[in-house]
Length: 442
Image (cartoon, rainbow, N blue to C red; front, side, top):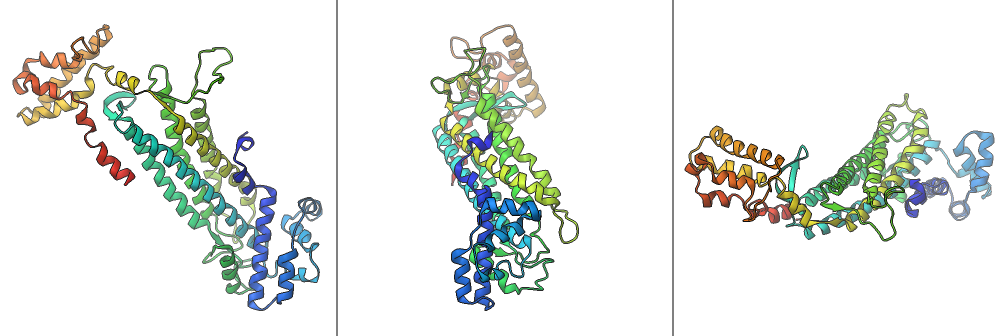
């Protein structure tokens, strides 16, 4: 399903055609390297570079007999050449071709993912500045805590995604290596110069040491970076799903004209995109474990990793690409309701200011223990008043909590009524937002 809607550019990176194109690119790089080292003359080199090609249907036909995809590929390529075909794949083993080619595919796919992540960060940044001072309640354990701004929430998302960007860029560096070291990685049949030249032509670095394969910890780092990114993206999606709950309704996904939410209930507007992102992120994370298990191969190499990578690499990258574009679009079009945020902020009758009052009392010589008792007993009264149906804010704009505090004799011995009222200022909680934004967005 994801592949059906995925971007063409990413899907093409992992098509059968793209796989063999990458194989041929590696083989041609080896031809040019051998030419530079003197094994292949200029004429044969030119013929191979110009004429070497393959046919996917022919490869499939040959593989039915050979039961070996690289041999089938090389046979198809040789059919497009003359006597010069004897130099194709010279002194190389299958994994020299495959692993170096897959490095190209992963590197180029990571470039797309990195571009996607930057687009997501730009969308988050735009909305963060838009709502830098939009007041809302902060929650811990799902319970109202203290006032924050929606811009601060978005700034945290941006900062977290930026760390994933660093991981992806590091993973790209880790995976951008090739190997032309031969069957056991001992360079017995080809010099190290060959590998260095091939990698130079392909804009890769030589693996410092390899056996028959490029070591799979590199692949595991790539899939881990994608998984960590997915976890952060799921965090964003889950938060949006919470904001869209009817009882909260502080933000919601854009609902386009003609869109339907339920086959049975015409009123429904469901957070289907963020739910979809949540599910896709679970799939992306699921690819980490097999990637980790691929690290342990028998001796110099077995092929237990091969079947796994045929799934996790294309599926992982295509799914991540699709998910990131969906989430970016979601953030970009997210409908935000500042009035509802403010309404929810006032829902608990001023209880969100409890710590502010608590911290003023020690300044007046009251012990922290006594201060906590004074503030808490007044706060507990508010919970009871709310359960009885009393209004959180009265007609004078005074919250239940403020009313209780103004009438508390012990509190009034330490704080004047004006000092108590001062504690109920939202600006106190937003005074450092600009500084936080400077830290995050530099």
